[in-house]
Structures are given as C-alpha cells and as structure tokens.
Length: 288
Image 1: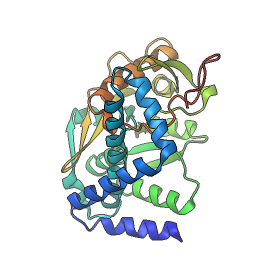
Image 2: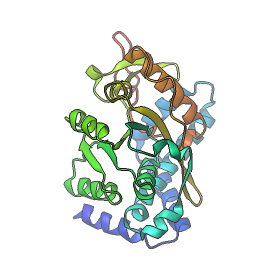
Image 3: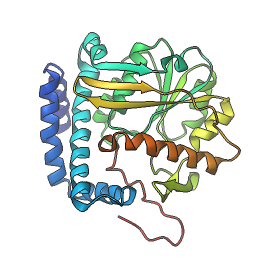
C-alpha cells in the first residue's frame, strides 16, 4: 500500500515546475543524508578512498551534495516517465558527438553510474531513431520494479534484459543493430570480475565492456549525463579508438582510468552509495 501511495505521489510531481521538484529533491537528499546512516557511511568510505587528499570537512560536504543530487535525480523520474513528451524533450539536451550513434553498426554505450543515468537513457531512446537495448537489475518490490521497467520502456521500443542470464540476448540484440547501453562500473559478481585500480584502489571490475566489444566488433561510445538547473545535459563523447586491447584486465583498467576523469568533472553526481569496494583481493581487509 505504501508503495502504491508513494508511486502515486511521484507521478503527481510531474505536474510541478522543475524548480519545485528540485527543491523537494534537495530536502529529501538532506533528510536521507541525516537518517540513512549506513549508506552515508558507505559513501564516506568510498569518497575517502577515492579522494584521500580532501579534508574531512570537504569530504563531508561532497558526501552531502552527492545525496542531494541522488535524491533530485530520483524525483526527476516523475517527469521523465510521466510528463508530456514535449516537456521531457525540452529538459533533455543531447550534445556532443551524437553522430557516433548513427547507423546500425554495433555500438556499446558506456554509461557510468551518474545519478542522471535514466535521463541519459530517456534522451537517447526518445530523440534518436536508433533502437537501444540495456541490462537492468530487478527490484525486490514487484510494483516498484514494474514502474521502473515501464519508465525505461516509454520511448523507442527498447529491449530490456534482466541482469541474470542477459549475456546471450544482449549480445544478439547488439549484433542485430541495437546500441547496447551498458553500466559496468559497479561491484557485481566477483567471480566474473578482475581486480584493477579505481582511483588507485583495487576494485572488482567487470570486463564486460571489452568482452562485448570483442565478440561483436562494436565501437565503445561513452555517454555522460549531467544534472543541470534546466534538466540534464546528455553528452555523447567520440568513440574510443584504441579499445578493446589485447587482454581483459588491461581493458578494465583503461575503462576505470577514463571513468576517473569523467567523475572528476562532476564528483557529486556519481553513485557513491554503492559498495564499490565490497569485494577485496585476497589478503586485503574489508573497508565497510
């Protein structure tokens, strides 16, 4: 019942001006920062490991701002998935090397876990004629899971594959001309990962970007989504010209290194509440 009421309220937010939605998101983010103690600690550990040169005061400030951005982006799903298509388009600015996504040659979209990841997906599926596919992690709450899937399927008739057993159908869609929107920068299955540096810290990293690129001969095109006052800027970067390389661990390290540069341009908008260093190399102590 609470889930139904909550989703109904989120749907009503689509009717409000954007500045009101963002204001509510700011309040929600500050509340979460105060009350969600365990997640605040996770984010604080991540930030401390990745930015060791920052003072405790600066780390706390960055942590607080990341919670605000996270909450604002979450409430933005109200208008992304419920507002009129014209309003959605007005608030999503697609910029950069958009031509890199043209045609039907195999393309892997490297979409890091910035808070605006759903806005980036919406912009691509709404504004480009190309077919898209992605892999998602299902939610335990069926109502919430259905709402998220419906929102992500709103434009462009995309293909959505659950993370479990998604490899073969996702690869098939890629080979058939769909651009595959991948978010491989989290700590998932350790047995499928390699340990490579992330901000100088060994991190379990899925080499799936390299693996898919080799199997399909696809180009890798990064897409970075930045939360702005007017909505979102969705920046398409030029395709990587030197990827994949000769081995999976080396490619995973290259991905993380380039991701670090993207994060440094907007550190408060990265998804720090995830336990990025949950799995550790043998002999290294846990950090959470």
